[in-house]
Amino acid sequence: MDTLKKAGAMLAHLDLFHHMLDLRGLLQLAAHMEERGDRVTLISPQTITLIGADMHSDPTVTTSKHATIEAPTAYRVLHALKGHDAPEYAVTREELGALNARAVADLEASDALRAFETTLTRIAAAPGTPAAAPTPSPAAGSATSPAAASAAQATPGDTERPSRGRRTPDADPAPGARPTSDQPAA
Image (cartoon, rainbow, N blue to C red; front, side, top):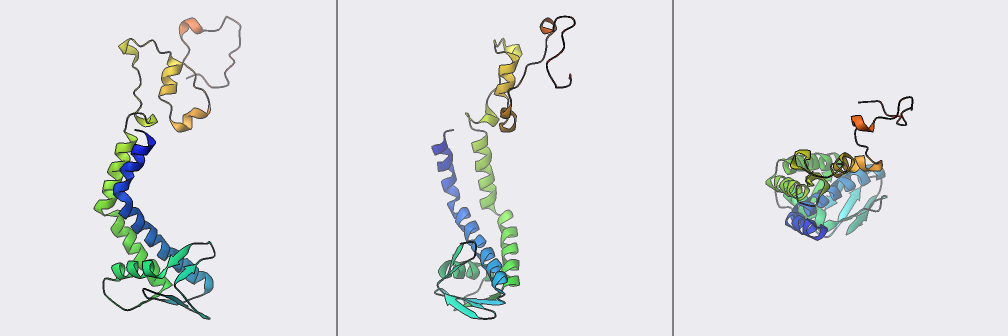
């Protein structure tokens, strides 16, 4: 499966990715509040107000790690998490963390995540990927050398060093010659 088709298969999961990104924004907001020493934030569709030693209101909050949290997005996510309408939501950083933990648990049990897992499995099993590459069987009369067969079965971690075929009786070194391999015999 070529890269473009794999990317296309992910399009069905854009809502899941956006939801995860929005939840991440709330976690970043909670971390930002802790960094600043803020205890409460008020979130309306237009403004995020951080309340702590000082008060700061803005339509967007940029954290020290350069993450940007926008008021409309934070409001929409809080509305979904809290489950009721309000002109603005007041939350502590601990409540933000708890709401996020519940949302992650719900996400882990969701059909959307199971569908994504199915897509990942389908992509990984697609022809042309290393995990699904067919390996020739010696019984099939293949003329492939053992080294080539083990290279075809190599996983990404195995490709750092060329693989060696097993010694056959006719490939034994001459008597008195020292083996050149520093690998123990199997």
